[in-house]
Length: 423
Image (cartoon, rainbow, N blue to C red; front, side, top):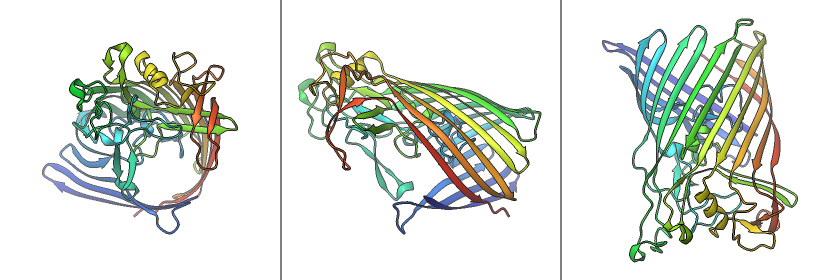
């Protein structure tokens, strides 16, 4: 259960260079388990002037995905920073006829996924591997596991071309994402992992990327009705397809137990390690992603509307990353007797995400929403339960031992009451 209060402030001043705008939206959230100490957070805090946007805003990569749902699940590319926002510095050129072009430098940490040293850092079911953490100031300085990522080198670079007209909107965008890893072997003792002289050395930086295209159409038969579809492809930049393990409340590590079955999957930006059979250090192996999402909004009356939404996301690893995952000795995947694997047979870190749902909102009074959402989610893993098992160390009252890998489903619902106060 959750209670939330949000305040916004919008100040605009006309200058000889155009409108100077300062905008802020901040909130307090109290969730089950917080007792009396809730969370203070900032969704937006930016200045706009002469085409520049400086501060915390929605990523210019994002489009409509996430606008038709509350929980959204694995809601596709645009669900990543829609509510939480991201730190950025952007310039938008207005080209006329509703067309704009934007170039943006965006906080790299907000889009950071797991980088995994597969020969050193243990990978446990439901956990993020690696020694690194980042500080999430939105969660009262809680440390968030961050795999084996090194310090940020450059921000993400995003370019977007968008059109907004009477018929609706469309956008294409691309992003460049730098992956900087820690060292082969233990980061602090210099185990080396095959480095010359046994000293510290790290894999070369690898550059991930993402590209999207989307369109939303205003439908003619009822005022407010609209439909959208968008797709995103990415390599080494999983956060751009709506996945994340750090600051935005999405997920990159999946687990669900069902008796002696367990669904376990990890979404990572890259995997690296040491494979003697492959010549030693592997360098960063970037993970491939794609997602398609869509939605429909229909107004039954001016005070009653229904949304239908869905997305499908695919995550795949190359052959080197798969060998590190299956035979590197640090993952929980074992043979049926509980021993280490000597081949990749039956073992694959690939998985798919399916998410569909519907939401209905009633406005019994102006600016008062009563919403009900029902959602189905599924994680499809590619492990063969007839050939491999997953080893669990035990926690939270669940027994340790070998569990059969499986794909699992989740049904969920949200009941939400929201009152908006406008000046």
